[in-house]
Amino acid sequence: MSSEPEPISEVARQALERDLAEVRARRDKVAATLRDQDTVGDRADAADELRRADDVNRLDARIEEITTRLAQAADAGPPPADAVGVGSTVTVRFADGTRQTFQIGVTPEELDRTLVTADSPLGRALMGHRAGDSVSYDAPDGPATVTVESLGRAARGG
Image 1 (cartoon, rainbow, N blue to C red):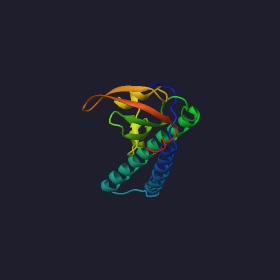
Image 2 (cartoon, helix red, strand yellow; image 1 turned 180 degrees about the vertical axis):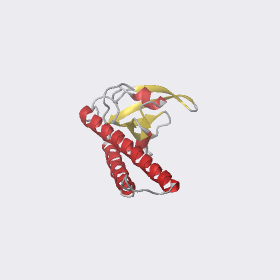
Image 3 (spheres, rainbow, N blue to C red; image 1 turned 135 degrees about the vertical axis):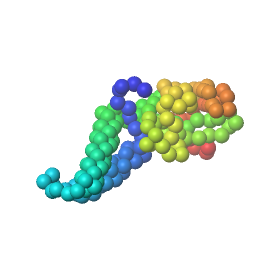
Image 4 (tube, rainbow, N blue to C red; image 1 turned 135 degrees about the horizontal axis):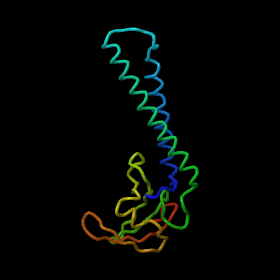
C-alpha cells in the first residue's frame, strides 16, 4: 500500500470509532487502579502495578493508532466515485452469473462479511477499475474473472 492516506468506508469508520471508545474506557478503568508513586508495597504489589502500567501504555498506543487512522481517513476524503479504490463499495458479477457487493478496505480490524482487503488478490485486481471492466485475478481455485457492475451501491435486481 502507498504511504498516502487512504479513505475508509462509513461502516469501517464507525467500527473504528466504537473500538476507540471501548479502548478509552478500558484505559480509564485500568488507569484508575494505579496507585500514587509514593505508595510502598511488597514485590507482588509492585509487579502488579508494573503490569497495569504496561497495560495503560499498550492501550495508549492503540488509542493513538486508531486516532491516527481516523485522521488520515478524514484527510484522504471520501472514496473515489468513478473507479475502485480503498473505501469503495463495488458490485461484481462472477463468471457463474452470481453478484456480490464488497467494500474495499485496508486493515483486518475492518473485517466483516462484505470486506475485501485492498491487498487480497481480488482487491488488488479491482483497484482502479470502473463499471463495465472485466477483471482477472488468482482465486484459491485458480484463475477467475469478474465484471465490475457498479460502484457506490449494490446493483438492482441482483
